[in-house]
Image 1 (cartoon, rainbow, N blue to C red):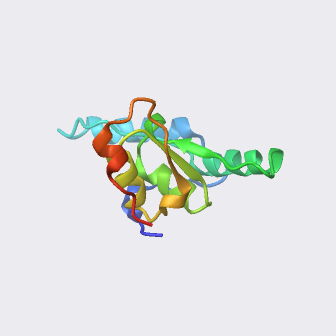
Image 2 (image 1 turned 90 degrees about the vertical axis):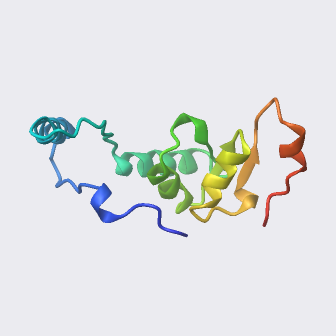
Image 3 (image 1 turned 135 degrees about the horizontal axis):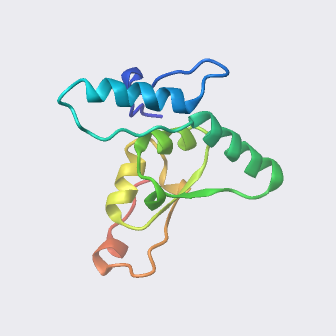
Length: 125
């Protein structure tokens, strides 16, 4: 698996730490600078727990994550490391998912309005 993120993209929280505390700290930090870029807070542990719960509830099922729901590659990489499949709606989405090391056999091309040039473009295995 090709790592997409680096450690500076993440803040590890101690047990009992509340996400709201992190958000308040980030807002305070950003407001003290000229940097007004948006930031995103997510609990990757919760993503993993929900993935495991799905697998336990449907042991013969295989989840396919809809890339268009949230295309942040940190989430894609987290799920890819757990052998999840991916539902992609464009060639660009397929290429982004493959860029973190997801093999073509775990990608479905699920756009209902497929362009001919994208159908004819083979996915490398």
